Length: 407
Image: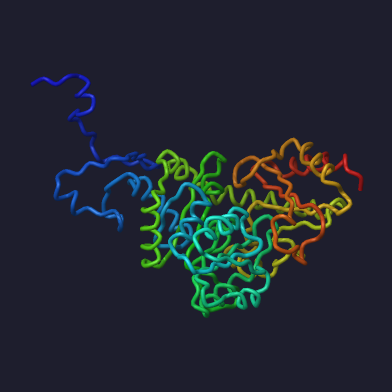
């Protein structure tokens, strides 16, 4: 029986030959996944990536990105989520239960703290903040109900670099899981599962690494995505099943965009790093700033920890991403600092970082921290996110914006 053309458009017999390979993997999009027969439907599983059952649990495209991200960060198991914050939420929901406690560094990513103060608190999960620059404070705050410790290196906005190895070792000795927000390090500054300080023989690693793929892996400022990576198969299963129950999914066109950007990620990361160091050293000479925060600067909080972890024989100058924060002298008013930000021409006002365009954002630090840290100068903090412009042009842009301010 001859079928109608509209039916043939859906049930056409042609299948292209399978032997096709190109620099970029194919984009396999699906909600529904076909099975050849009922027996295959009943036998197939997605839990170990041996098959496909439903688009939400992965396609060849998402499996490919997950495996490449594991190679980048030195992990073995990965899941993709819609954003970096979703990655944090996925870890918390998979590993914490009512009555548990989670510890966060006081310089943690702001939405991570808001999540703890909101949903986690509503679900009966307690939280406390510890001083990221004091390992003893972390040890003292780990209690009988502490199940998870979040780590950041470098810290959000203020960019302090903690003694990450000591933090991980402390948590391990006390039987507490560690989760690192590795967006800044990105798998390029250091390896989260093989932390090795100069002179050490035995590496230690975090239990879980989350990564906001929105930043350097994407690189275009146009994709929202996150990943959760671990080496432990039991931890991965807990995370994967929670991921399934919450219905976290990502669009394959977004996965394609990240896959396309990954080959140039190291080039872009190190270019932004070079630009940030140029800007940081220039800012350190300006009288308008009470403090310049960048881990590579000798007087930056945690510089020695950054140097011991990120400077290696293969990478003697270390890696330090593309973020610089400056603290204005305290006599400047908020209106003057806002006018400085507004007058910048190459630095655009916007959140996020890791893209091609440099960004600027003023922050009210007293609203972000439990206590004002002793190692941060008093004054209004402005974060500069260095993109891929020539750093000399960025320096000139900053110079013209500072000219309107009294010294």
